[in-house]
Length: 111
Image 1 (tube, rainbow, N blue to C red):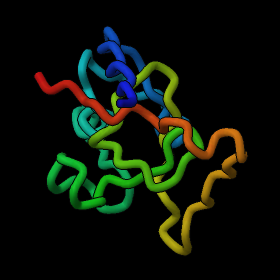
Image 2: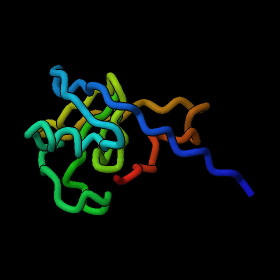
Image 3: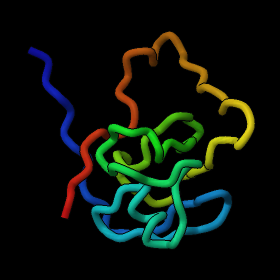
């Protein structure tokens, strides 16, 4: 049986970079929660379920398109950019050696 990697530790708080501007986040926040607290909406669709089922909170996070911001833990310096209003966001280039690597953390601790 393959062991699952440990969930990332909860960060004590800090700042994200959203569309080039700093946005504060609190301990345990997802990217979407930090944006909502700052009066912004992630992606083009805002938020609906906050459970990763609807896809309304999709944005490009650290250069990776189609990231569900409600399921992505906020980390200091994380770059968040909304998908373009027209057309599709660029897809990341995956190197052959990284094809099976684990993407951003999937566990979000809820307070």
